[in-house]
Image (cartoon, rainbow, N blue to C red; front, side):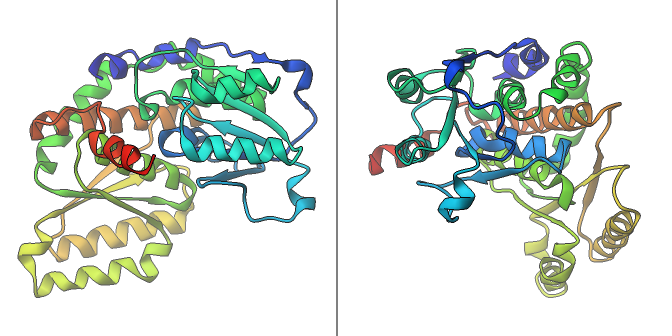
Amino acid sequence: MENSILNFAQQFGFRPEIKNEENFNKNIKEFVVGGMGGSHLAAGILNVYNSFLNIIIHKDYGLPDLSQDLLKNKLFIASSYSGNTEETLDFLDEAYSRGFSVLAISKGGKLIDFAKKNKIPYILLPDQDIQPRVALGFTTIALSFVICKESLDELYQLENKIDSKSIKTEAEHLVPNFVNKIPIIYSDTKNQIISYIWKIKINETAKFPAFKNDFPELNHNEMQSYEFVKKYQNTSDLFHFIFIKDSDANSKISTRFEVLENLFEEYGLPVTSIYLEGQTKFEKIFNNLILSDWFSFLLAQKYNVEPEKVDFIEKFKNKIS
């Protein structure tokens, strides 16, 4: 995994093409992306880049619970890095069976076999032996190629802009403060996919619990729970908060970050602030996500766990198959 993170910027050299393009409807501007785990994350990243994109993210079997009239005008994009995700195969099968416009994105597996057999448009991702959560350059470019080609130039530039090695140095300074601590990651609502990706990378790579929430919603419920520290200090010692801050955030949200950080300090709850840094939106996003990769990878080393494999998830999949 270390080399995958170190060489992550190379993923932005990927130039996708649509196979069976003669069956691809280029005029649809509404999308449903079906995918699980790391395979749907690119859709969330595109929503951060452009909140006006009409994307529904579906993380389940079947199709979204919408009327036939609403569904028929959408392109159903089945995204599975492995190509063998059970829920995503079911999503594609139902969309295709009901006569909707469909497209598949994968590096192979049953998803591409189904697309080839039925002459469904598909994008073939580079076949690298990496986990979907570390393939976000590939999947974001592929999805952008279908949904918003105007974003591709900015993505392609990241191949020469991202310096993964220097980001590792930043992570090395962060990690010692989080050993044997449960990270709780907060962002604003606009960037909630970023805090979510931090959470899942810690879960999957470091094999450790982590949780996330978003401003301003957390100010109306979750933050009240931390008053318990007055009574149970030993329990509160387990937590360390990460505040992901964006200079472009609403000034009222920035104030909420500041006030809550001060209150947490009064309660003895540690907070580390991490800023989205870069000249463009995608540069900000991916600089931060590579930091999350290094952070979780270095934590895995501290905990002496294998960072790449997800044995518990595979054991679960085997039992339900």
